[in-house]
Image (cartoon, rainbow, N blue to C red; front, side, top):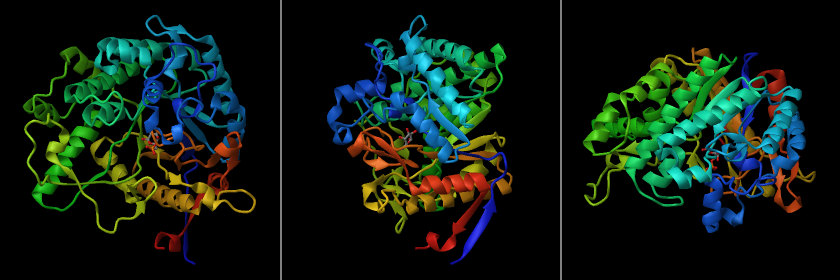
Length: 475
Ligand code: BGP
């Protein structure tokens, strides 16, 4: 059996991620504290796998002590999650804090830190308050930008001595893409204008929060967690290259450029204008974005995105959608995670790292999510009841290796975080695909059990070295 071993730099993050809405459950939640995700679940429960959703999730709210102990056992150096905006206030307009929820969060953060794990906190991981969604159309409204800044102000004031690494959003492009561009999620409205307005307001909100954090003089940093997709063209022919370049503009650079370089790509603005996409922005807003770029990025990387030039003309009755410029391309023979339908291609980590190094001033960044959701994981349970997730160990090993290789080649990659720490609730897929180092056993009152990968992860974390079984890669 051939093996190779690589060292992890001493300060390299080896962590795991999750979010408030996917774990905490509704215990203690008050009337009027629904998030957008809660509203979607309440309005459209039949699309959620087996009816599971945010209502109980992993019941973290009641079980965080147990989970924090497991963080230690899994060897995490860092843990990323979010604060639930929709539960943090009883009055979003006036910033009246829900003391009960805020106190829970105090205890949770204290426990994480006491376990020697560093918390990293997102202000929003899709937990836009339902009230703001219904009253103002959510991120369509400049009022909501102001209320988000108020929320950030209150959160920083309360927790700044417990948390130093903050992030405004997790995957800020996702909700509006699913709801307004592709109309795949409740309330199923197609409006490319609204999609772009949400994009802009989330960029603006990020810059305003960065500004606030600096003005207050808090110690630490403010970044964002983005999900740019490493986009490969089908071929090196001009029409396929253009498809990839346009995809990159609409889905990746729409956040990467304003957040890191302080401005929207001129070509993106031109194309939006050309296709009549209407979004409201002012010179003052663009100046705020220009002057307040983020300190660091977390990047979620799951699969490669492959495109080709479109083969059919656009239906003139269909409003503009970026797919005007591309069609998905499936690489014959690609290696797949069949449960999730995502291609596995660890090289995306290295390629993204080099792009950030060359095009985004080598800003500090880390892999904020990487992982493998597997259906029916119970089939891999051994006689002792432990899930033998060797496929996850191989997946992490190969992806982590690419991060370390990139770092040796000058990338400013600060670490690797697995999605997810425990199994949890995915949008719609709920508990179907299991991602965790820790199993949540739904048949036994959500009992927690470390999977084989958790012990392996701890070994890597403690030894600061990764050993890859090269034969595994080619099975
Ligand atoms: C990311 C989200 C996570 C998580 C993950 C897994 O996009 O930030 O919240 O859900 O994807 O994907 P999925 O839940 O779709 O299987």
